[in-house]
Length: 228
Image (cartoon, rainbow, N blue to C red):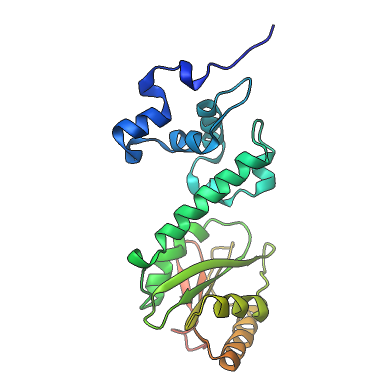
């Protein structure tokens, strides 16, 4: 016995994501409804709304969905390359919009860094090395992930850090990484990595303002500790 999904066009109009957005505005749609619009089409057994709901049940939040790789998304039933790429592109547009010039956040202290990254980084089970690129007034140009390490270490090569800084015309940078253990105390490796990056910044004329280590709802500013 074959089974075909109920198409979105067969649903009542007030349940169709596109019509709902046109009538009420995007702010009134749930995450899975917005995701269904991005997906566009479902499969023979599942419409786009059901497929989007299945994804949100698995990933629970848009932040978790953002962290999924293309390969992980494509492993889901009904998600091929085109849908996976559409999801990643839409989330990246949202991230860039949050950092656009009109809403540019300004970093004035380690606390500002903590506010910016804590919820994204405190629960990660691998060390992620991020760099915040700043303009001359301390405004955030962009915050980018540079590398992902193992359980206890991440790798940040000066070439990657400063290649992007030059590309973005950054005046200064702030280094950020997390400790999955929850303890933000800097290790010897952290201090050596920071020293190398500070020296590289002096050579290219881009100042390393701080290195902030994120723990579980706490953080360490190496600048505040006199380690930079």
